Amino acid sequence: RKEVEQDPGPFNVPEGATVAFNCTYSNSASQSFFWYRQDCRKEPKLLMSVYSSGNEDGRFTAQLNRASQYISLLIRDSKLSDSATYLCVVRKGYGQNFVFGPGTRLSVLP
Amino acid sequence: DGGITQSPKYLFRKEGQNVTLSCEQNLNHDAMYWYRQDPGQGLRLIYYSQIVNDFQKGDIAEGYSVSREKKESFPLTVTSAQKNPTAFYLCASSRLAENTGELFFGEGSRLTVL
Image (cartoon, rainbow over all chains, first blue to last red; front, side):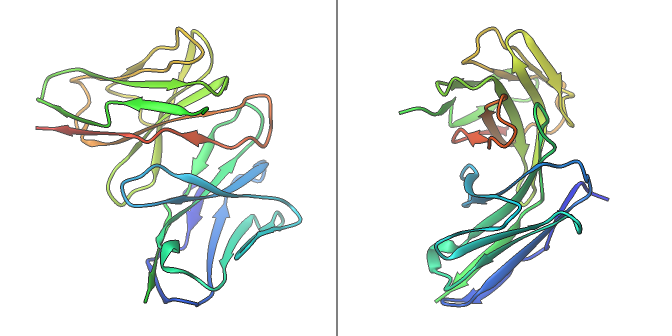
C-alpha cells in the first residue's frame, strides 16, 4: 500500500461546480499536511496547509480527520483557472521528509 | 526576492554523459531536496540534505550524486549509470526547525537524453 493515496482522477467538471478531492495516508505518526497545486510542466505550489480544525481560504476548504487518516480538499464555484493537478503531501514531523501522493488532475470545462 | 533558482531549465544530453543540475536558494533554509517527476507520475525523492556536508539517499538515488558544500547550494549530478534519466527534476527546500514548515520548489530542470 502506498504511503499517501489520492483519488485517481481525472475529474472533469463544469465551471461553477463544487468538487472534492480525497487523500488517505498510512502513517499514523504524520504531523503536517498540505495541498499543493501543480500546473502542467510547472513546479508544485503550496495551495493550503491543513490544520486539525480544518481551514478555509476563499473557495477552498481543507479538512483533516486524524482518526481515519484522511484529508480532503473542497473547491467551490470552480473556475477555468482551477484546472491543474492537486497533490496531497504529508510530513511525519521535525526533520522528516515529505511524502507526495500521485496527484488528482482536475479539468474545469466552460 | 527570496526563492530557489534551478538551472538550466532545459538540458539535452547524449547517452553516457554525466550532467549536473544546479540548485541555489536564498531562503536560509537548512533542508534541501531533489525530486524526480516522470510524465503523469508523482514526485519521487532522489536525495535530501538537512545540513551542510551531509546528505541522505531518497527512494531512487541510484545513478545520481549530490554535494552540499554550502547551505545555499545543492547540485545534483545525473551520471551515466542512471538508466532512464529523461525526466523533470525539481529542487526544493524547507525550514528544518519548524515542524509544520512547507516545501518551496524551484521551477525545475527538464532533462532529455538523446
